[in-house]
Length: 345
Image 1: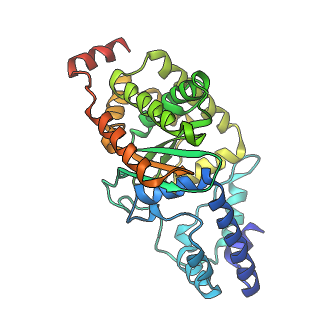
Image 2: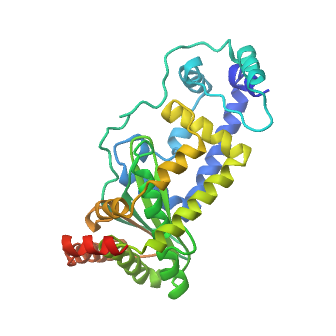
Image 3: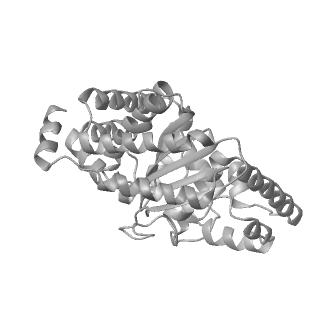
């Protein structure tokens, strides 16, 4: 059935129209959900001028302009033989799966792979710094701070995983402990790592009452600065490594997660990467390398800042600019002091 859907879709005109209407409703729902919307607006600025700036849902104009003929052209261009990856996990027999693939997908034509070659967006593409305040009617103010981060193909993404974990990746993370547990400024606060083929970004998020937005922003900037300048204790890194190892191993026992891992690694790296190989790469991460990435990525001048909610745009933007300038001007540790701190860590 799956092969039939991929190899012989009908794309009936009425079905295309109905699905187009559904996506428009999904788009409008996303615009009403500010926790989703703020990420789209942030990425639009961070990767302006590249495909990464375009929201996955598109726009009302792009959706309404979709016709059956356009869908068919896209399908015929992209759904070709060399572009398809079939991944299976669980109680399956490899030879049997291959036989089914040959039988039911063998008729798909096309030889040239239109996949994900390196350098699609430029080898040195990085998330750009900016400040934007977007006024919206809402109960809360939504804050996103974004830093440049290694791409999915970059071996330093394992250092980025540790950095994300220490900063906001769990209940023991610095943002969660300081913003939520100690100060009660926000219920939702965390960081997420977005690793794309040619680039990446580390996004830090908090949703708070509008009156508490300035304090929440200041606390987040302070935690970012302390991590970048003063480093971290070895115990913090060990907690993150344990959490990531555990989630990776548990994920490998889930057939759907394993299947997705097989497919993604085949598309990006062109080969299967066993769980043991990934864990070894993660285990090789050193505190010095994490600190070097923190120094590079978390510079105040490199951050993208988005604030969305019921706040005045111009005054808040000017205040954010002053706060960032103040953070840039803060005295940092000397190289000698930093090395000493690293040895203690």
